[in-house]
Length: 418
Image (tube, rainbow, N blue to C red; front, side, top):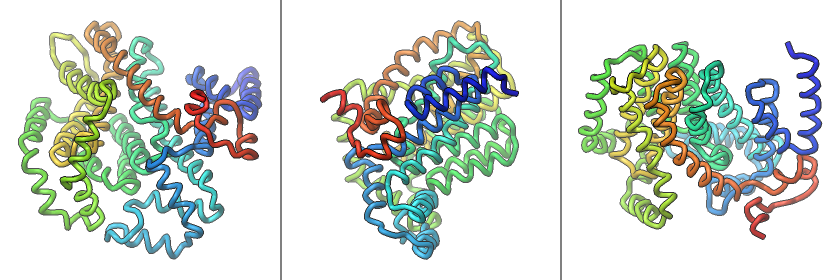
């Protein structure tokens, strides 16, 4: 039951949100432990989606251009695209992007509404995932390990789910379903994870690993896991050949995507792209992965005297499965394209966070936390730098009314520089 004071605070927060959404958002984040205020975090992100500014030549700019060019998108066109998705004859290779386009076009041709709806769906799932992680540690003393929690929160840029539409949402849906399945073993969460493959087909690969581990009830001998990881390295040279020989089984759309990501010209362009990165971007790209990889294995060293319960054991097993997957895919695609690395990093951070708050006085886990602090600070700064180009100045200085009746299209980054 809400107290009279809590209801009064929520009433005034509604007023603040209408006048200045950013203020309500900051208050809600600072008081995240109070569930009644979390709605303002979601509403602020919806506001961000409505005012979203796609970066030129990004996925978001291509979605905006496609949406504006499509004057109408009726049910027959939508049904035809859905029917031909895996034949390689559709304008897209996943159900979600087509469905979102169809739903929004059914009542408006405004691309702002398209991005607003994308933000609503993405942040609903994202915030539900973050809430699940928060609930793991809410009753425990976790202030010394907040860096691991922040790492989970910024696994993607805030703009990713609005800009890229498909893979970031699929990632969050899979991560939420898989994490809940690991913690509860309720089959309904397996269905949630499977839905991620309909948002982006690449997640069906992850679902396959989840199914295998689920059949074993997330209980595999540690040395068997190590043997499997070693096997992944050995099979790395054989896996690309196996995929190429069986591409027809996955459909023409998947075959086309595989060729796009593995053709010589594309791989070479990715290598060239790495060469022009600044040192801090290069460091940020690899540091989190290397840190989580080493930490993941070091937590099993007995001399560090870390205690495990059933949940931490299950998280370890599933994270190992995600590492196995990322190692296999690394033999097929380049480092930048291997987005399965993010799944390993994410679950490794959840595992480290859960392990840390259950071993609060463990010196080694505190040591890992201190090492990770500069890594996550750099990560946040780099992500923030990119996101500021997508944040409309009206998000920082205005509200929904200003956004509805004005046509402000200047990013906060450009506004501050000018």
